[in-house]
Image 1: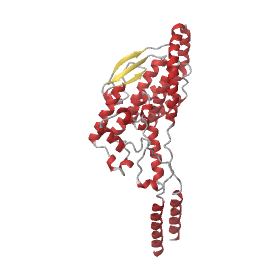
Image 2 (image 1 turned 45 degrees about the vertical axis):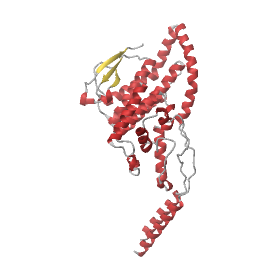
Image 3 (image 1 turned 135 degrees about the vertical axis):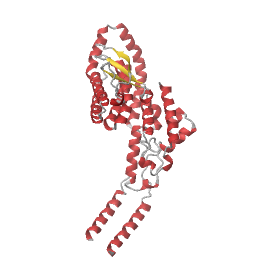
Image 4 (image 1 turned 30 degrees about the vertical axis):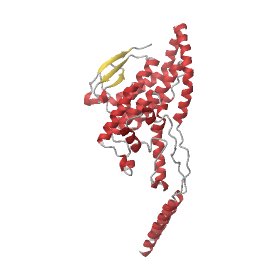
Length: 151
Length: 219
C-alpha cells in the first residue's frame, strides 16, 4: 500500500513539474504572399479542405485545441507542428523552385492517397479534418492539375 | 483501502486544479521560419548574379578551348558518378523488391549528395545542381525510412532529378532512360542495361516498360 502511495505521489510531482516547461506556439496573424492559397488561388472547396485538414501543422498558424495548455500534450503537438512545417509549409510555397514544388505536390497526392495524411492522431481529435473519398479525389485532381502547369 | 481512496481523491483534485491553472498563455514565439527559407533568400540573391554570370559563361564556353570543358567533365565524376552509382543501387533494390536494401542504398545516397562539390560548374549550372541535390536528398531520405510503396513513389521523383543531373554532369557510362506507362500516370527511370527490369513493380511486372532514350557516355 505504501509503495502505491509513493508511486502515486511521484507521478503527481512529475506531472506538476512538467507543467512549468513552456512550449513554442506556432501562431502568426500575417499570411505571407508566398502562401499556397494566395499564389494558386484554388477553388473554394479546395482551400476549405486544405485549411481544415492541413494548415494546422503545415503553415505558420496553428489553431490550438484546449489540451495544448497541458503537458505532455503540448510537447506532442509542438513536435508534430515542427516536423510538419519542416516537410511542407504552405505559407512559404512560392519560395520553392519548380522542381521542389513538383516533388511536394507529388508527395501531397501520395500522402493523401495512402491515407498517411492527415495523421490519425490528428483526425482522432479533429473529426472535421477527416477526408472523404470525394475530398481525396478532388484534392488529387487539383494537385495533378498544378503539376501539369509546372511541367 | 481508505488510504487508496484518499490518495486517488487528492490526485483528482490536483489534476483538476492544475488543468485550470495551466490555462495560462505560454509565451508566444514568432513562428520560426525554417532554414530552407534562409537558404532560399540566399539563392534568390544568387539568382540575379547567376543570370549575369550565365551570359559571360556562355561566352566563355564559346570562345575558350574545349579542353576546359573536358577538364570540368572529368572533375565532375567522383561525386556525380557516385550519385549515379548510389541511385542504381536503390533501383536494383526496388527491382528486387527489397525494402531494407533500398533503404540502405537511399541513406548512402543522402551522404553522397551532402558531399556533392558543385564548384567546378558554371554559376547557372551550380544553381540548378543545388536545386536538384536538395530535392534528390529529400527523396533519398524518404527512401531510407519508408515502406516499399513510399520508396517507389519517391523513386519516381528521384529518377527525374537524376535525369536532369546527368544532363548537366554528363555520364561516363551509357545510360538508358526507360519508361513504364502503368505506374502513376507513366513513370521513367534510368538503368545501365538496355533490358527492362521494372523498379516500380518488381517481379509483379518485371518487363513492363520500354527504352525511351539512350544517354550516351560523355567520356
